[in-house]
Length: 305
Image 1: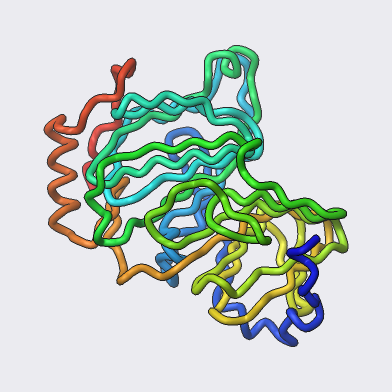
Image 2: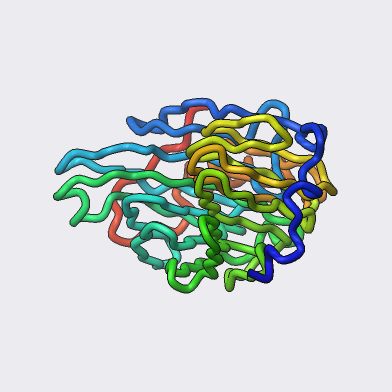
């Protein structure tokens, strides 16, 4: 394959993990009866590129009649990315978008100036029961786009580039990697890849992007002689081309991009470069000034703190 032609797994592998800046073991959080593992934001690292929030959902198993019910809630100043390995989620938002998200699809909702949405288990899967496993992440927007009009993009798995070669499989969810580019429209330079490696195979983490990380979902990766088992977020310093060796079968997410102009304020579901903007968003939700989500009668109240 052309993307492997110039890759030397020995030359690309530093003799030590000096290129590794931080290892984050995600914390378990309850989000209303459903547990997630949260890797970002972290006390030692707020963002990797524009990625400011990173949750692993599941793996979980819902019995027949049960499911996930995230009631309508608001966002500003960010874009949400929902990416599933297993199960389905039905998305509704205040712009009138309705979409069932399936494994391998890219679902990007840009909140910008403000949007509300809900996420629920679809009716058919609720009736029969389903497993749910995936990643929910937030992309902080550059200052010039924080108040952009809300936007929604969805790309089925079949539309996203898939690079495969003898035990190496990479789905390019966003940005450019492995010689391929995703069709997803972006407001800043970032990338997102689902990588599956068979035991013993090696793949590169290129130095094209300023900030990069690997989230080991399942299995064990070896980097420069050290082993990292999932779930862990490995954040690398800029500049080095890294070789990712699979000690077992591995599923991982590669992510990162250009650093933003500065840190962001985060409160509940709001992200902004301005504290005052977050205060106004809080009041807008409290007073019901966000547009409603069609076909929804519930909502999540503004937290007390």
